[in-house]
Length: 257
Image 1 (tube, rainbow, N blue to C red):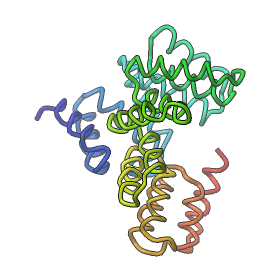
Image 2: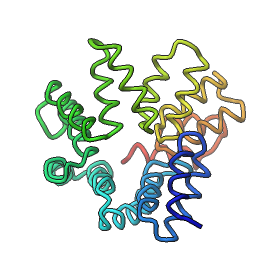
Image 3: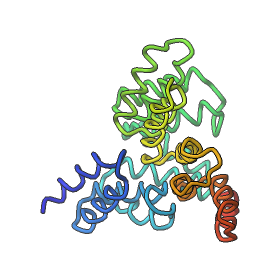
Image 4: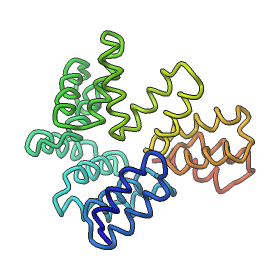
């Protein structure tokens, strides 16, 4: 069986069927497909089909980075920053990957940090230029971030960027499109896609769209997805509905990170 085809199939399935995407990536990774190992690490890190497991994700991301998958090197820097709380070293790595390796996702992440004033002086215009650069380098998230910041002034271009980014598997862009949607059906479709691509808040939003009281089994399933994707509030809401001390403890662990 062609393991490269398994990886391609998993990529196609990921916005709509993350369970099978995960299974295909796991199989292809076991067969030596480096791109699948990188994708598997990404899914494990974010809790896309199964509880987020940064420690296990590191194994796959480190191997993929060492094999030349630069996007995995970027994700390792994000783990260093967000899980290890080593902001200075992670920032240095991200800037180097952007400047020296032209890693589009690193440029986008540096842009987000500049936008928020994390590790840099807050500079919205510099952030926009970094998003534009990341988008030009082919990063879907960079195009999505550019669309997001352009919305107030260049609505038509912004929406085109967001739609393109969502189609290219940027979950944050899909979620923003859900929030901008004019019909509940479109909102849910975009939010479900965003959830499947690792946006925890989108999973929690679908739970509310399914059942405002979050008591229906389908609603609880979406809350569980949000909890897996490290949404502490979703874990607490699920704990309340199910009366589960274990879920409440999970929420506490997430908040402690």
